[in-house]
Amino acid sequence: MLLLSLARAAPLVRAASTTATLAAALKMGDALRSHRRRFTEEDVAAYAGVSGDRNPVHLDDAFARGTGGFQRGRVVHGMLVASLFPALIASHFPGAVYASQSLKFAAPVHVGDEVVAQVQALHIKATGARHIVKFATKCFMDDEETLAIDGEAMAFLPTLQLSAEAIK
Image 1 (cartoon, rainbow, N blue to C red):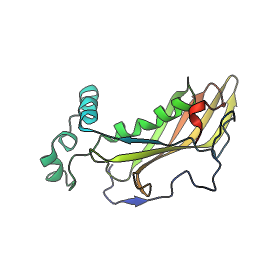
Image 2: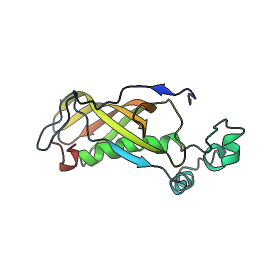
Image 3: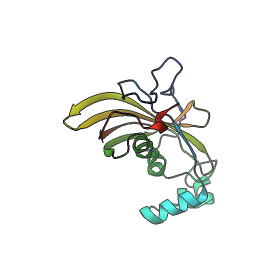
């Protein structure tokens, strides 16, 4: 359920937090390098086509403003925005398998908005050749204060060694 109030939350990455570095192994508390993305009209149209989600709050500006109650117009599909999390994890750990994700949609992301996705390791468990990692997942508006999505993800990682892209 979309909550129209603008939630405020602290970003996962703070100066005092532990940040993953090159040639290091992922540890609890490590934050992966964040990812910025601006969602376009083309992104929303492509997602609607692939997913079949043609809700007019995503595709019709007048409907979004009127019936939908979104004064700034069309909103990006929440699951499209949330797709940044598995992409971010896989970019740091090639071969990662995304197992689960919980999401709370705290504020709308409008077409043209830029968001910042952040992922932080909360728990790590070794299981043979793979590692099960629970991540905190947060997506903020460009101001990095307004929380758009909050959640947790579970992924199976083939290694805890960070790829070169993990450097902040």
